[in-house]
Every structure is written in C-alpha cells, then in structure tokens.
Image (cartoon, rainbow, N blue to C red):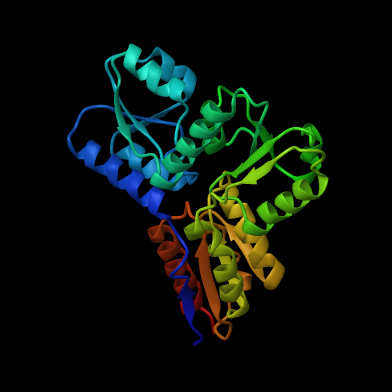
Length: 291
C-alpha cells in the first residue's frame, strides 16, 4: 500500500500556537473567558475551545462588556480596543503575534514622524482583515489599503509614499506592488517600503509546491474562512490538479482514494495538526475496505 503523508511544515504558525496556548491556560483557571473574534479561522478549533468554556464575541459585543476577561487573538488589535478595555475594566489577555506587534509599532512610528509631510502610508493587505484593521488603527484609519495592483490608482505618485505589508501576504505580490510604485513616482516624491512579511508564512508557498509535486493526490485541510488556506490551496492546485479542499474528514470522496496512490495531507496556518491526523485516519479507514 502506498504511503499517506502529513506535511510536517503545514499547520499552525507560531502566533496561532501561542494564542491557543494562552487560551487553554486561561480556561484552566476557570471563570468566563471571552475571545474577540475567532481565535483562528477554523470552525472546528473554535468549537473545541468553546466547549472548554471560551465564548467568541464581536467588537460590538466587546464594547458592551464590563469587568470581564478577554483574549486578543494573534491578528492584533487597534488602539481603540485597548482604550475600550481600560474604560470598561476589562482584563486583556494579549495573544497578539509578536511579528504583528512589531509591524504595528513600525507603522505607528512612521505615521507619527511623517504626518506633517503629506506622506501616504500604504498597506498591502486585505480590506477588512483583522490584522489590517489593527494596522489601520495605528494611523487613525488614514492609511491606504492596497489589495491588488489595480488599487494603486488610489495613490498620488507626486507625493511621498511609505509602503508596508500585512504579515501573511505573498512575497511575489508585494514585490510586484513595489516595482509598479517605483516606476510611477514623479518629481521629488520619495518612496520607502518595508518588507514586513512573516517568513514562517511566506515560506509555506515554496514548501507546499514541493509537497504537492511529491504526491499523487492532495487533500488540503482548512476552514472556509481562512484567507491563507485559499492562497495555499491555489498553489497546491496549480502544481497538482488532483488537489481537493476539505474542512472535515467527511468531505473526502471515497472514490478518490486508492491503495496505489500516494496521498498527501496539508493545510493552512490555521489548520491544527489533530485535524490533519483525523483526515489521515479517515483515509486509512476507506483504504481498509478496498479490494
């Protein structure tokens, strides 16, 4: 029987591991623990922690809380969240990723030093994403968010531009944005950019490419809300057409499983290892009844 392989480089990134560890430590103390937004874009992991006693809330619900304990997930939060916590006597369990916090400080410092120079602070990222909302908060929501090259029309290339990136964006996309801006700057306007992409996440793309090429069939496991999952699955599909996106073991089509094919299981930065192991067990179960 051919092998089933779980990609050792898939699964939670450091920031998510840290956030979940903090959540479990706080839950072990007892009492109500709230989490501001999904701790990770994976419904099964959120459900697991909620069964341990954690309650997920949105920002509107957070603003109404008083005298409570709230965990901030790895994505980071804008200054307004901390201000609300202070006013409402909310104890913050801060699980913001250190990489995100460093980026927030860079953007805040640049905004402070350049606010009188008409410099445009630009963030290459996804509009509405939790991390990007936190980054925007460092500039009093004045930064310009660029999702794709077409959005560059929002910029004035005759004025200074300072470019940052959401930590989980692809390196090649960031480089393309840099090249276009450099080519369009006019007059004496200055262009600065800071590579703030997390290598633990960006390196997943070359790793996933190699993994996809080395297996006959790929089952990519992720939550439907995971932006990172969509990007990585697209890479899998590009290099191995026999790649299938699933969220639970029950999504596996038994007709795709054979005894002779090598099967690879991989996932997003928001996919827990236990979920990939459950998929492995399901594939073994399907194979056990094949002739």
